[in-house]
Amino acid sequence: MESIATNIEAIREEIYAACTEAGRNPAEVRLIAVSKTQPASLVREAFDTGQTVFGESYVQEFLEKHDDPLLEQLPVEWHFIGHLQSNKIRSIIGKVALIHGIDKLSTAEELSKRAVQQNLHVDYLLEVNTSGETSKYGMQPNEVLLSADLLSTLPNITLRGLMTIASPDRVRAQEEFRQLRTLLESLKHNAPDPSKLTELSMGMSGDFREAIHEGATMIRVGTAIFGWR
Ligand SMILES: *Cc1c(COP(=O)(O)O)cnc(C)c1O
Image (cartoon, rainbow, N blue to C red; front, side):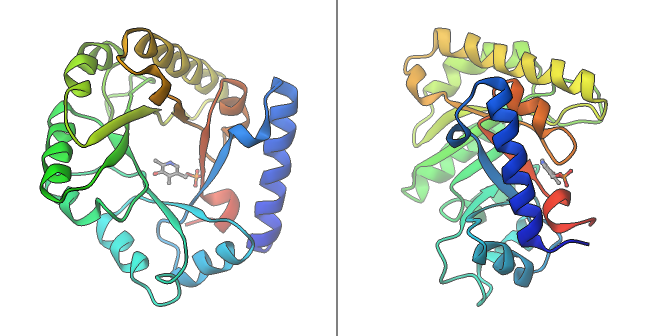
């Protein structure tokens, strides 16, 4: 196992190469280090190499890491990338910069209600099921378009873009990433404020190069940084 510093360095080089190939500016692609199941000490190790954005998937684990003495004083930017149940929303808002996996209108409504109660503003992404696999979370693409008007009326929350987890097959994954980008374009077309709809969270350790080619603005990489979970 290489060191975390070496892994991050290698990924940054790959991001750079994929951006060059795709004619994109590497500054448009943010690397989110997915630290779920990894101890605070390894998050700290990654932070010390200059990686400041981390993604967590499980509420309890996230809260423990968020408050860990090794990390709590640091300007870590936490993203919640897991499946979020409505009853857990209250405990994480205010502690995360972005929630990636809102997959139901009712969860967005609950998010808005809690944000109003706690007098906070929350940015979120909708998770889209682009692969059609029934085992996956996420809204259907047409459901996203149909919900857009209502979502834009919810106070204290702002939809910033879309997120997906693609099929394991890379060729299919690339098609799904393209589909997500097209969906974001359609959303922007009808949005009251399209300038807010900028984010495509797509691509993981096995497929972030394809995602960058299709316009990813955030890639969520765990295994390639921290090793196997
Ligand atoms: C675990 C996880 C990742 C990271 O996956 P790797 O294959 O380890 O890079 C990315 N996104 C989500 C939503 C995850 O749950």
